[in-house]
Length: 268
Length: 274
Image 1: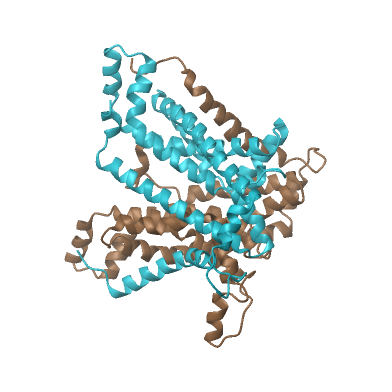
Image 2: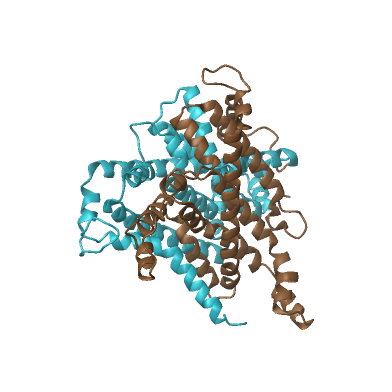
């Protein structure tokens, strides 16, 4: 195998440096006792203290986490059932149509999702706030869960189900004791992705959140528009650490799941 | 007898979701695009869209999206190519992807500091002898930050398609006397073109509809289709006009998807549904 040339190495290092520089720049200044992001005066934890002493911010943080957890749980449930339904659709055309409908929300720009949901909620009479944000997050997470679960279902051998039927399993048993254990890695991947999508979303939430309700992204947006506050830096450092943990956890989970396919089913 | 003929009950929530959150929203956007401020039926919005103001905005939105996509490809292609050559390439790829998981707003906020009048970018310029510049709120900062945001989304599909190329093909091309450049042009590039197409899909459409970066970094000087929709919906409260712009954005999206759509030929690794 050819080794990387010097140019290649320098180039890759440069790309990595540029990709990470803004993130470390934010984290670095989160320890600045001066109030700016341009001159470092001294080391301090005070901005982290500010994050944890700001009740409003903590409530917003809690809102964000609650919305993320609830929406990914519900969307995983609906998405998994949907994926199972799609796989068992006999008509190829119907299946293709349902799959295309499924991808629409994944490829649509956030602005359009947000705007159309805003119209929908206003017409139906859903009050903008917690409920509208939660419903939107569920709605845009469902197709992601379906996409993550489908491949697992497609690689599952139908004879497993036939065998279970022959052994006298009811439909319910087949679902809970054959199918779900088999596709578990896909379900976890879907849940995890839904979680990060929800935590990350700004544009859709921005449209459907009312005046009283706010998530972290919305709050950061309004803080950033007002100017530089090192509280945001401290917050972003915390978010970076949590994100890194989640991504690495997901990576190793996936690697394990990838090395021994079918372990989900073997647990029975 | 494997499949049960009756519509299973467990599909109800999923179908309900499709009806309520996929079909209804698109229908509503389409319907509202024909309404004026009072809610009466009108074609005025479409007329307005073809007026010079909106046409110019659409053109500039396309121009920016084009520039952003092009620069992203130029930066991401070598990155992806050399990444496939590294040891532990999956881990390096993951490291490229991680920044894309950090909240977009935080990255945009970082650039407010970096490009600020007293920020590190200007300090560097000053040590090089060029005076402080107003970098923030310019086209340059808008394009720079957008490219920064999109690099991982371009690297990933290109990496995947490059990684799938059978190395024997490259060896064969070398054995037949092709230079490194010819091998790239005639073997590697055509085989990895689908990755570039997916990358264009993943960058061009979002670049048309960005509104966070335009607001935070470009200081409202750059108006994309996304910014215009947000403006019509949340500031002007003219949902009709906003919906009309959205209809066109959807149209552009469909056209781009068709142009960059993968032909069955050789690129059927996504074709699990067949």
